[in-house]
Length: 513
Image (cartoon, rainbow, N blue to C red; front, side):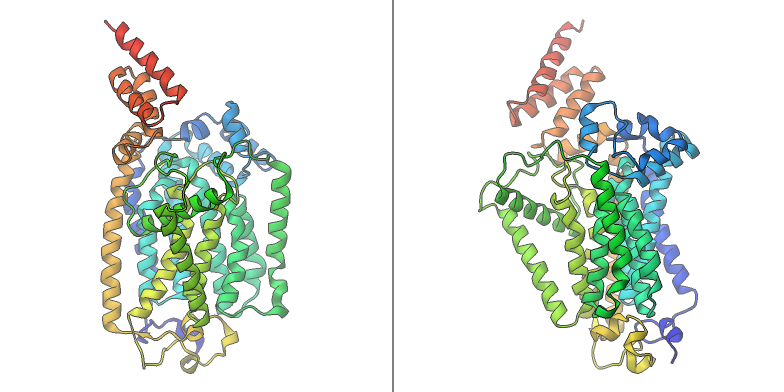
């Protein structure tokens, strides 16, 4: 049986209908569009008025070349935001904003259509990657979950966070191209397509820098790494080095330290606490938070912090799982575990930024998490004793002809009952997550509504109460402003801006006839 015929067969060995693959891609696209259709009417929210509406640089395509020579947010009039953005370099994101403005003006719907198209394409790229590594039914299930996961709502609903969508899209395309080439014994994708995707990912957002490491780790985990072909990675090394040099010349050193005053061990334990939070939200994404301030996610100051201990156990378990999977040749689980850790590393403040945690930070890592979980669950839903139609014995071509997940890792053939349960579980999770995402999109219908939702879900947070105080003060709702500002001062009594605004609100309320 030829390799082409093998690829057309499903995990059970039966010939797959010729229409199935296009239908699967159409289904994922429909799911992505369906759960985010209600976000298209939302206005600009959160940081969008500052970085999109009030950004003159995106209002002419003639400014695009300057994006490649200036740091992120260099056009901001406010010194605070200009300093914060000076550590970043994201010219492709700014270019995409300029294209949107040229097409739609300042119509938020136009920008949101682009957001949705980017996520839809990223979901299809993840499906292509998953199809190369796990059985067809399983790959469809995890791609569907990725397309509708509520954690991704933040990246889609805040246009400023398009950086996450862009870098993740190019990252997934690059990784999918590399796997596609390895499966077919082709070197040119790694030498050409992957470096291009790598450059685009890095120029969209800083975490794209880990793609090169993910490519090498894939070859190591799946035993495709060959020393005599190490030259294949030279284009990636050149792109990565060139990006780092250019970034060092264009950006500035961080002006703020979110962990100021904390010892090194406290920072490390706080990052473990964030890891525990990320893993828990990947499984059950409720409640979600648009801004994790220190009151919602306080820093670890004690070795007995239970969430930090949970994070340490989670990291230890991930490392142990990866080591066992590697030792037992469960290649995809081993790769996915390492990729998940790699994808999260930039957010562990190895690359400085100003957020303790963020739902959008888990956008790309969720793909690795779902891929690894899919491989493990698929193996639990399999029957042994049958010969896989994807194995070398069935297909004929030697291992060097291309990567094959089941042939390399010894995966058994999926049983009919296992496939049925996998479909049922995937369908239920997709429906549940899709419903949560549709509801989450309504929370982003205005900044006020999002802050109100945060104040309900996290009444002990500071930021939501302060922002609601500002919003209500500007709209003349002084009693509501006073209520939230007093709550903020109960949590943080020394917060001078909140106290000043409270005094102004009380004075305006007294002056009201």
